[in-house]
Length: 47
Image 1 (cartoon, rainbow, N blue to C red):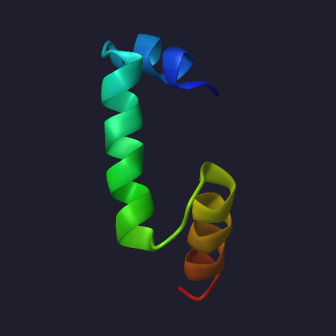
Image 2: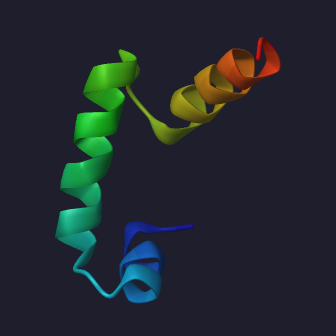
């Protein structure tokens, strides 16, 4: 989904969504959603 679509669902601006994602990417040490999703799947598979 786009930042706009996520923002509509969560009732926040696309810019706010983007800032939250930037923080997630920084904490996960990734550069984009695809890498974040792949990393999350890898971590969850070990639980």
